[in-house]
Length: 70
Image (cartoon, rainbow, N blue to C red; front, side, top):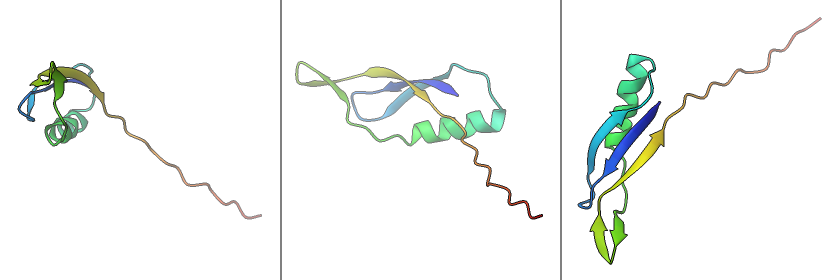
């Protein structure tokens, strides 16, 4: 899922926009995770500034090797 996240000058997360369509429960988990991001605000001319970034969450699956005995 791709999210457009507003990182505010005060160190908080601002508006989050969902940019891709995915499973509803996965999107909910992504939004919750994005709200928990901790960051150092961007700086312009030595002052904290708002910024916007695209944050992407993916699901990685792992399949264990199968042992076949003969």
